Length: 229
Image (cartoon, rainbow, N blue to C red; front, side):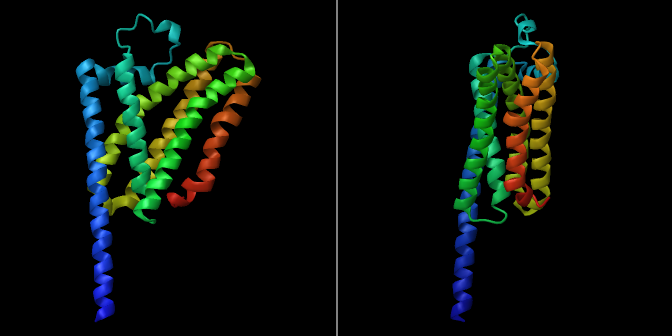
């Protein structure tokens, strides 16, 4: 009887912790929604601008007179939403098989890894190759990916946090969304580099060593086991 009571007590503590973490997650996601609302207030045509910018294969020099350009302040808010939504989705995926504290640690590590890689890769490529057009174009492309990707991940995070019993279904969907964003970044990056005349061997070196290899390493070491693929 005493053992059963202890088990019930532990179970209740775990449930309470889980409920507390969900409240925090929802609070963060509501903050993300607020950032989107504020961005929308600053740009009434925000969603159209984000979508159009994401799918348009166009160099920066051809965007100066574009009426759909997103302002600096709005871009910062959208970037914050991407970072928070990405971290929340990683956290929800990890809570399926580790403790809350461990899930938070892994989520912060993975999101930081992806963000840092995407920020330093094209800058390092510019430094090594001397092709300064890469940095500007890939920096602009990164913002496009983050803006639309943040909206998608926010929607996934909101639905997921309210339906945690379907975590095993949401995890592969999150992985597919994340890998699709990364793949699109590679495809569009190749096109932009080709348009500005980057030599093919610099392009190959950049993609393989600074973009694709870190992603494959991340998948094989962590994501493959995380999403049961």
